[in-house]
Amino acid sequence: MRFQFLIIALLLSSTALVSQDKEGMFFVGFADKADSPFSLDNPQEFLSQRALNRRALHQAAITELDLPLSQPYQQAVLATGAKIWLRSKWMNGVVVQASEEQLAAIKKLDFVTETEFVAPKQYDRPSRVPVMASLDRPAPTPAKVPVSQRFYGFGWDNLTGMKGDSLHRWGFRGEGVLVAVLDGGFPNVGYKDFLGYDEEAAVPGNYDLVQQDSTALDGGTHGATVLSTMAAHHPFFYIGTAPGARYVLFKTENGRGEHRLEEINYAVALEIADSIGVDVVNSSLGYTEFSDATMNYTKDDLDGKTSPASVAIGHAFSRGMIIVTSAGNSGADKWKYIGTPADAPQALSIGALDPEGERAYFSSVGPTADGRIKPDVSALGVSVAAVSANGRGLDGANGTSLSSPLVAGLVACLRQAVPDATNQELLDAIRATASQASSPDNLTGYGQPDFAAAYRRLMMARK
Figure 1: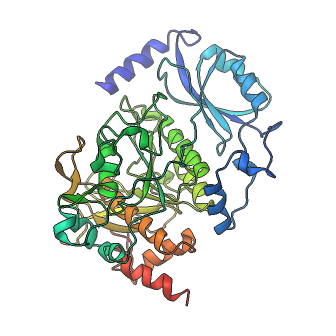
Figure 2: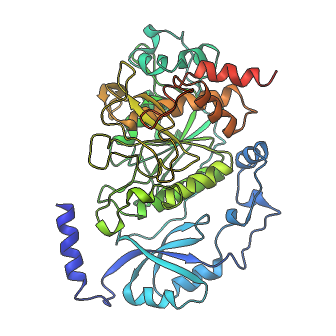
Figure 3: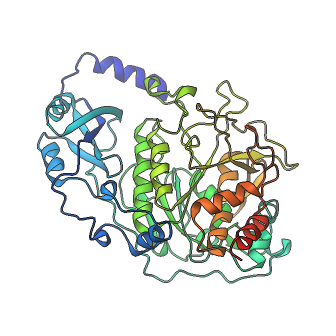
């Protein structure tokens, strides 16, 4: 139905291309960041102290890419009558809702370097500038329980296959680590079983980049299921792989259809995550085909440099973040290969294994267009136990959407365990100690991680 509606809409638009009533969403790129009120000498004006500390650990310079957009350029765009929907400092541009006439006026502005159609008109509400999460409120710390199957319940098998139980026994459950989750919605996660919080107001931050309303704690249930595998803390029933971490939630996926705008949502989410000091990101998302077929990717586009989301992962990684993402569920389809942004060189892309440790038949395979091994590692992705989206039951689910957060949670635990390690050191240790590190392939990458071995390797390097 959605695809049929799109064709009808395109046919109608062909008879009224210059009508101001026919609006679309367009990315508008800027030439530079002239007249910015911000300075690289005062980064605390646009980056949190957590972000600055992370960059200092990684010796990551603060560059013009980090500066907010030029205000005069934005004002000139608004003067055409177009509405600014999103702002991206890393892409150096804005997404506007504009008619053909307004877009023509924007193209005439001398600082505009490109315009690209990215989606049909979205929602009839003004764009909001996302506000940084308030991390000042003390985080609730779930009471620690013995690390055993009895206390961890249905979360036990998710943890032990990657020796994550060892990290938990050693006291590393993600405390002090800030994790961002990018997905399509997070209904009901105010329940204590998800985040350890008794009320939604206690969630450190959540951003809806799709509808740009006041909350991302609604929408599709996929994000809530993904989140539970990391964050849930319900002794005797279910404990996730990183119950001690704090979570910031981003709605980037639009249930109305797949368009390139979602990749820009993804990039902007990473920018915000960077600015508030996020350490680890999970994104159980992927893009290959869209509701508008002209936007579709080909296998040659899987080079880590074509998708805005893949490029954004590179920027985030160079600033000290770790981005864990699902490889995709197309292994048994005609497409077969990973999608974007799993093609990003800096992404830790996760394939799926069955309970016997073999590649799940649906798990997408590599290599990338430029011949790199993907996925990087693989984890349980068949019959994965997860808390139901209503927070009060249990689901069993399949997909790299589940294997990715299982790994991301344990990456958060490893981040806590070795706080002076760089993100590259952590990823190198994970790959080097995985089950087939000596003979990686494009089916399961370096194999199933062993986080206990990765921790020991990192600690040995520090002696």
